[in-house]
Amino acid sequence: MSEPQHNDTDYAFSAVPASERKGFWSMLLILLGFTFFSASMWTGAELAAGLNLNGFLLAVAIGGAILGAYTGALGYIGAKTGLNFDLLCHRAFGPKGSYLPSAMISLTQIGWTGVGFAMFAYPIQQKFLPGAGPAALWGMVIAIGVATTLSTYYGVKGLEIVSWISVPLITVLGCYAMGKSIIDGGGMQAIFSKSAGNLSLLAAVGMVIGSFVSGGTATPNFVRFARPNAAIWTTVIAFFLGNTLMFFFGGVAGAFTGEKDIFFVMAAMGLMIPAILVLGANIWTTNDVALYTGSLGLSNLTKAPKRPMVLVAGALATVFALWLYNHFCDWLTILNATLPPVGAILVLDYFRHKDRYAADGSAGRQVNWGSVVGVIGGATAGNLVHWGIPAITAMGIAAVCYLVTDILVPARTSCGSSGK
Image 1 (cartoon, rainbow, N blue to C red):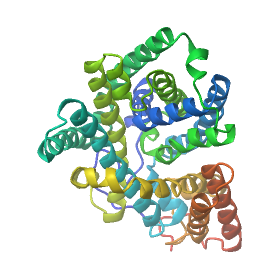
Image 2 (image 1 turned 30 degrees about the vertical axis):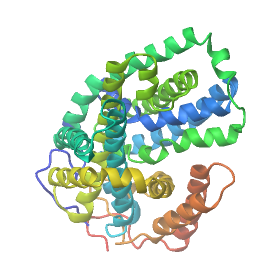
Image 3 (image 1 turned 180 degrees about the vertical axis):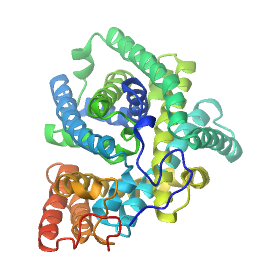
Image 4 (image 1 turned 45 degrees about the vertical axis):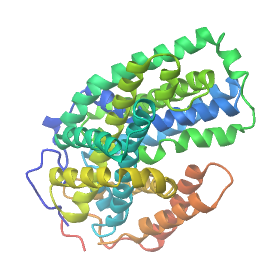
């Protein structure tokens, strides 16, 4: 079945042509902006509180390598095909089966966008306007919501402009805060000597992977704009380097100051203006990309162009931001465990059925049950099995379920634009 065609410069319903592909640095900055995520700094602070320095370095290296390999594989597929996450799901899940992963990723990414808006508003109010009423809080939520929605509305070009500003800013100020912590704290060993040492290496690696494996599943949405020879390197470098920097910023500076939030870390150092800049830039870049992904998912569900869906997604994230922050984080954590199985299935299906991913390829049937069963099985395992690394467990179970079902229930046809 062919996808509906719309005059959409973000290619929500078709592959990105070679003429629209971007170079190494443009894609690297967009992806770094995505991985520069405040929650990763929180994770870094938690790692530092439970590990010694050697354990911290090992956990970040192992987890980062696994995360880089996972996102690198998805980035390779996105660049080779030029297809976004939802169009890849058309092939792997079937046109109607793709509604399941599209709904999951839209709900998750729009939800995290709303949480991100509140993550900006609450610290600013707490520090500057502690006695202010709800109007001040809502004013800040609306301001960051409007700014993020407008930049996302202009697609990858908007993401690129924001990233060119935000990524260097976060890098410079984050490195300064970390360096100051190391000097004032007497060195890395002295800072990490405060650790409680109650976190196992396996659990720490799981935290590193889990910090961004959900967002990393949407990698094809951006790397499809990369030239194929730059796709894997930009993805692996961005997810390994970007996440590693966030863990170090949060871990070192957080362990030194006793704070987890980068805003309060820098505020404790007397860097109030830089703290506001880093927090705003951090929230803006990550939420830009999350909102972009959520709107593409809504386009697949509604068959409407992407830009109107950006406005819908931005409005939903803004209106429900404070409620999401206070009530939805546990649900978002559950949803996070459902997305890694989707990524694992996309990779497996691409290499098992490459003909589906050609320009005239189709899924073969409206619902590919092997993929659906794989997501259900993997998501169940990821949420209920508490040993090992949840994301890896979820992907492993999803792969087994997918392969067994895909072999036992083969598609009736794998090519041609009129598949059933």
